[in-house]
Amino acid sequence: MKEVKIKGVGSYVPSQVITNDDLSKIVDTNHQWILERTGICERRISEGEDTSSIAYKAAKVAMDKASIKGEEIDLIIVATITPDSFTPSVACILQKMIGAKNATAFDLNAACTGFIYSLEVAESLLKTGRYKNALVVGAETLSKIIDWKDRSTCVLFGDGGGAAVIGIDEEEKSGIINTYSISEGEKGDALTAGANDVINPFAKEEVIKSKYVQMNGREVFRFATGAMVDSIKKVLEGTGYNLEDIDYVVPHQANLRIIDYAAKKLGLSKEKFYVNLERVGNTSSASVPMALADMDNEGKLKDGDLIVLVGFGGGLTCGATLIKW
Ligand SMILES: CC(C)(COP(=O)(O)OP(=O)(O)OC[C@H]1O[C@@H](n2cnc3c(N)ncnc32)[C@H](O)[C@@H]1OP(=O)(O)O)[C@@H](O)C(=O)NCCC(=O)NCCS
Image 1 (cartoon, helix red, strand yellow):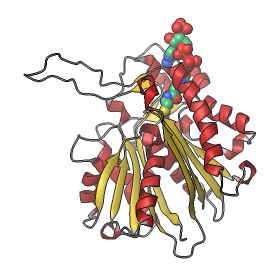
Image 2 (cartoon, rainbow, N blue to C red; image 1 turned 30 degrees about the vertical axis):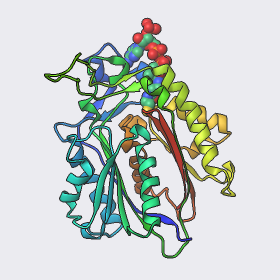
Image 3 (cartoon, rainbow, N blue to C red; image 1 turned 120 degrees about the vertical axis):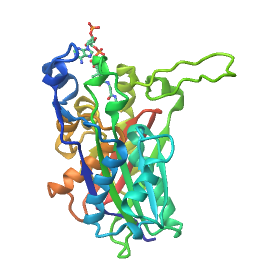
């Protein structure tokens, strides 16, 4: 069977750099605490740009790399938890921006696993034969749902976007080999963000919610370490590939300690895990495609390499994609 292949990747981050020292001026924190607990040194924060603009700039790079025009794209999926609006979706706004008038476009919310879930959906739809070229984007403006007075969360996140153009590989040489995904909705309260109050003239009671990121850090940490290890093992099952065959793991960039723990537990060298979180922080849905685009720019993605994308996050959700590049 012909495989679905990533034909081009791209990323974009806002130009404004916010360092740990900058944050120490607005909350009671310091560079050493943030670095030791997370590995993050700085992040990019929007100066007013919203998610669709970030998605567009990342998508343009991926489309140029894949040498594809807007009208050739017939499926757009944007993974995001910070859309410009409830409707239209970021995907529909992006469709207009790139002139993809032949596309079906929708957003997908699986928090930090969003890009992996979106790849799985896009791959499945491409394999029906009804679509030829998909644009899969992860884009976030997390700065608009962060409580900038809460030091336990505001130091962790950043804004940015990553994108991939995917389509059927006619040469049948490379592509997505397997996907594993699972959700654990019963643990959803451990990480929540973004909500409207339930208030209307006919309501029996008013439900007031927090629109900001709220997280039980330790519970999420526990989930994340287990999820990374399990997802990597599960995505290899039945493929004929083993852990030692992996050339690169591209993990969700939440926390260096989570990545180091998973590497140790799996007996894999840390060098196999691509890390850019020190520069961008946790960008949720954008994190994995941004890392892929950085690897591409650094010449680290070589034909024939075995690559595992792995993510975990709000929902709670987790999953992994096994790719022969
Ligand atoms: C958030 C996280 C870094 C916190 O690290 P931790 O070692 O669990 O730290 P704790 O929350 O136990 O806090 C330890 C102390 O540091 C303090 N602290 C919290 N944030 C701080 C900050 N930014 N600067 C300084 N001190 C801080 C706490 O108030 C606490 O102080 P106390 O002992 O006096 O009460 C860690 O739990 C984590 O990485 N969790 C996973 C988060 C994640 O990746 N989420 C996204 C998933 S997609």
